[in-house]
Image 1 (cartoon, protein in one colour):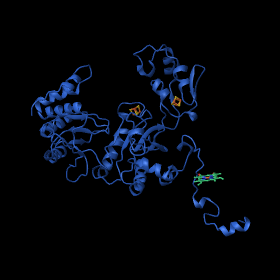
Image 2: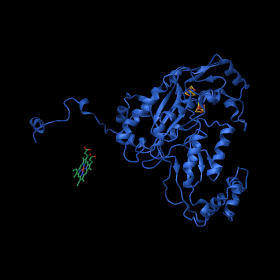
Image 3: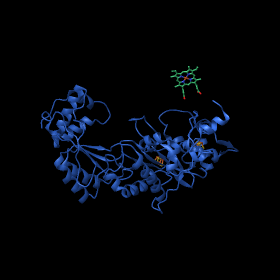
Image 4: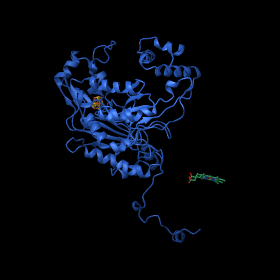
Length: 426
Ligand code: HEM
Ligand code: SF4
Ligand code: SF4
């Protein structure tokens, strides 16, 4: 596979950001098929159109997903990318690696693939970019037998779950996001590897409302850590912030002079519910009115901490625009205990409540968020056996098209017009 002229791509070797073109050229020295990737990409830059054929169905026996098949539509010009399948590899929760493990994976990919990767796919998987069909089973054999790792998910199934780094190095974690993520990934291997759903379904776990894995926007089932008692205040540390001895937001805005820290301006007046005030040099919080937005904690991490009664909020139904428009997840369960002791039984119960229903009533290629829209939130809450709460809505409905169930209405729906006419003559 020869080197191609890539004048347009060469432009992208300029500038300070790490250049994917430079990296690919370096990779091409040992994996000549990378010249063809660059060549085909250059052609796409010129033609302003993709040069991959539609679709591609490949995989390994036993599984219904995990590998995304792909073929060049100009294979004669670029034989190195005639087959260019992508393999999704299950990643460790929180993406902590040892160099030993990474070397093992890269040796494997050097042997069977292009050597090019994506670290990581948006859903979380480690992505091996580009190999031929005949390499898939041998790769899978070595991956499972030598490295004891598995493929990730693809298709109408549970996709690879992912999480924030949680308790591993964040003092705001309200539950062990990595452990839940790992536990549920293992628990639902069958649902990950063999598509059984109307459409894809994703889990994401963020251990506090900062939501570092963006679960509320990128997962059908988002578990977002929170607490229900009082924010823990260290008044001495609050004084240090006021005195300017501790940097606000742990120094996140140090690149610009924003003046001396002003607790009123930067914390009290920005609290969305206005539930904070200073009294006798002490910071006070009316926790009953706190929505746990994280702002004050984010600004003064050394003085404020989430409470001790920790758990999580369950939000369901986020999705991208196709078909019915983009959705963030809807709050379904305000507070759920998340306990390692019962092996996350509560979380599992909620997930299965959704699945048992959606797997039956979900239409073909209908995300759960769309199914919820179709049947309406009141019906969905009944399915979930959750009592409707004011917290379920941002605001009550303004239109009066209210459905009542027959049993809620005295006399029911069976009425006799003759009866009506006896009082109201036509
Ligand atoms: C072919 C002729 C007509 C058509 C296709 C028509 C169509 C409609 C439609 C679709 C509605 C809304 C119904 C709803 O939202 O449930 C409506 C409401 C109404 N129409 Fe007509 N209409 C026609 C003629 C008339 C005439 C001639 C009058 C009065 C003399 C009239 C008076 C009304 C009134 C007062 C309403 C409101 C009823 C309510 O909200 O209770 N319409 N019409
Ligand atoms: S989501 Fe919260 S707990 Fe998780 S890493 Fe981000 S700030 Fe920390
Ligand atoms: S967490 Fe948010 S709502 Fe609660 S006191 Fe702090 S700033 Fe106010």
